Amino acid sequence: MKDIAEMATEVFPLKQTSLVHCITNNVTIETMANALLYVNAQPIMTSDVREFPVLLKKIDSLLLNLGSLSKEREQTLLTAAKMSSKQIPLVVDIVGVTSAPIAYQLSKQLSRQKPDVIKGNISELRAFCGLKTTGKGVDSSISDQNEDELEELVKALKQEDLATTYLATGKKDIIVAKDNIWIMENGVNELQRFIGTGDVLGALIAALLGVQFSAESAVLLALSYLNICAEHASEKMISNTGLADFRHETLNQLSLLGKENKHWFRQARGGKR
Image 1 (cartoon, rainbow, N blue to C red):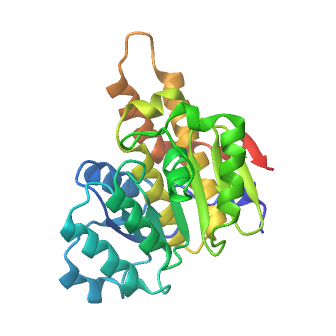
Image 2 (image 1 turned 120 degrees about the vertical axis):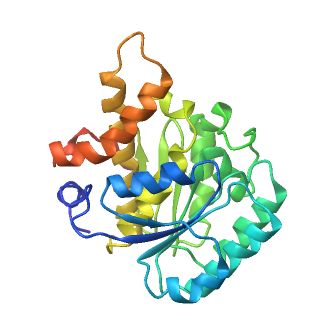
């Protein structure tokens, strides 16, 4: 694989625009669309299956997010996954599988389409693998992130279909690909305090897949970029600023970090295990 630090100089903002189709939840749809624009990707956010035959001939990648499920949205996600049929890079974000049995079953159905990437927080990936988890709602549990639990998750993910790259986010982020395991340690606590950071990450991964980065490289670069953007945002905050300011500055950094410092990846912490 090409040196990852060298690859990082070529991304964000993207040199080549990718058209990313996001079928996602209603809570963060605007944030995701804007995040894609900030890195020079183009979002399409429609969930109308009547548009899919035409759209799937034009898009560069597809993101399926399980948040805000309904019976209609479940069928929409399944239809999109089947129609993409490995001809379009696919990211599946398994939001909510820790506490929603329907979402869990849907995540398993979608995994059979062999997506390029399956992502979620550590508790969600533990649930996906059939491991015990104390996660609730869409939040990861800190008790799922002890060293023994992380090692258990790594072993479980290695038993899954490694045609897919897996990303489990938390205090330490785990990437399990066919040939490599990465443990990354960037990020700040404030990222857990505003909605949509995981959804934005999924969109960034899809944007990189859309310009033909490998799944492993796309996950590693998008994850590191978002976390380092958050670190820069945190550094800019003063004592009397609130979380809304941090959110605003993190999103600001999506358009600034790579433009101001093409060697931003040198700030990444962690690496291959």
